[in-house]
Length: 160
Ligand code: ADP
Image 1 (cartoon, rainbow, N blue to C red):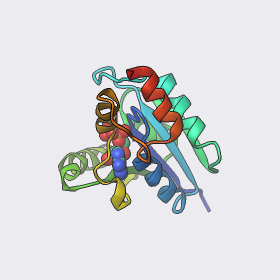
Image 2: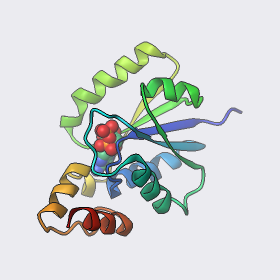
Image 3: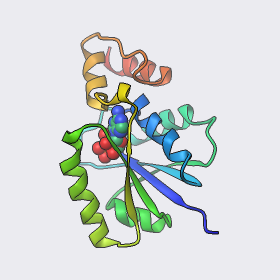
Image 4: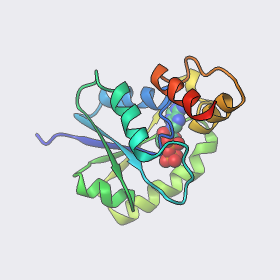
């Protein structure tokens, strides 16, 4: 039987425990999960792509059936190139829904065969996103338990 490949695309600027939660849930369902860091020049990122990849590699090195990669351009083209069956997106609250709904339908319009699947995060991470984490650290707050320790260190180094 063909292996089921899922792509989890995002900015991961930086990766949080919410992302990790989605990754672990996806690994229970799919044979392989490709975490794909989008390099979007329109978005001003705190960490460059190499730094984001390095953090992802370091925190997932004990996980099996995972690939970390980056892409530029249209995500759906990248998904096709990687032979993906599924695109994974995380859902936190209703506020995510509109944008994600639009994007999923647009992607389906381009390729009917790649399905977008939403994974709900654990309740404790439903308020969490990379921007909040950056803001917290910038103003001296603690992000313990919200991001892996390597990420916490990288944030402190970059922002303080
Ligand atoms: P993007 O710029 O594509 O939104 P992000 O890195 O912010 O990239 O998010 C990547 C994916 O992970 C998105 O589907 C987002 O909804 C999801 N995500 C981010 N934070 C969380 C979280 N705390 N719980 C669940 N999903 C999350």
